[in-house]
Length: 242
Length: 315
Image (cartoon, rainbow over the protein chains, first blue to last red):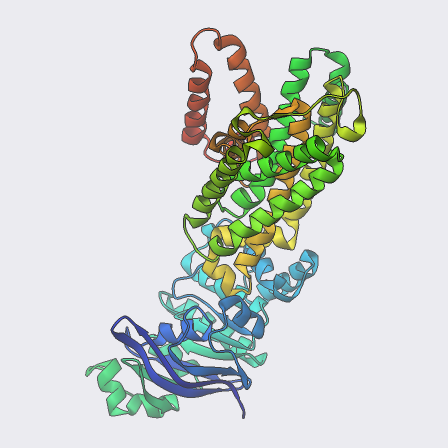
């Protein structure tokens, strides 16, 4: 296995608060990496630094060996780094199809060609019955799925999914997990940021745990979850690993 | 209405518009329709950045004045045809657009709007200041040297009417194409959510800049045609804030971010202004402005999507 994303000594502060203190780890090609940690541990800051929304104070981000540190979001996106937002952000006044066409235009100048890609991606993510629905009329779960679909239409090599499972009912979560597996099987590496432990345990090949801007633990989900420090920092005393 | 009927009605109106100057020989009425076409064209141009991209400009008069003054000064000082001077004017307007857009499109919020207002005020002040060259507040007349199409000089108002109509149709077709193209879709994404747009690979400041450049060029071309139709320009009437606002109002009344909005808006606003000036102008000064304000309030209260929404089928 080779690393698709390497993060080296990443630091980012906001005023006096160090959101990321010297974080380093690798994301391997083709894996689903869970990124977990308590609120405020730096997970979303990490995503925002990697996709270029924030410029890091120090450190490097390498994508397939190329330095992409501090690349602005559109450039990071064209290099193959896709992301979804913690609260879904579809283009509300556009239809599902138009939302995805915008994304598919990333390396396509013709709208009709982009439409073909968009329709395929919509079908893949199971949104075909909503093709011509304005996205403001979609329920929360479908909006999240649209975010995912849009990110997928940019043909990324790595996707960072920020809490795509939050607020879903068990059945929807089941479907979501299945979809992420399918996406992963097409060769796309996934960084899966999530609080829903059931989804993390079901999906992730490996997890990294953040705590107060630092890397607390890293490894296979079953092993990391039994780590005392992780249990104490994140899961709380009441969590009983099975 | 059946499809056939619709085509018949559309064809009738098209013929009516084409034959209008032949049927009516009142130059004032012809000129009023010229102004409708001119404002519709400017509205279409403004809508590209202000409507589709939701970057509110209140300084489009700057582009109008730069186009108009450049072409007029070329004629007055060098006797160079406005077809050439106009192109130079459009180039200057594009340069001005780049100067406004470069710093302000990197920022979010009201900075772009403020920059456009400032730019237009600077243009107006410069035109007033260099009065030996521009005529200052007295304006500058274009000497009429007899009928000469190359210098856009005609005895009749009809040629200007047709020129404005041709320009309107050309710009309408351009906008219809742009709306469905990559740039139109990117502008819609920017209007909806800039962060999400950037996360999908859209270089938002570049897209906004392209839209502003096209918009400025259209507005400058309108300025050239206006100057030679009226035969006289002065800084306050063509570089003032009121013109900038009127361009925006035309689009807002008609329907912001829609293809037909600027055309409907120009029709309603310009005709209403002229009618109220005609009938109420003698009654009390300002009565026409009051009606204008009232229209704006009514539209914003009851039809915030604009009047063109009245004609659209519900989807």
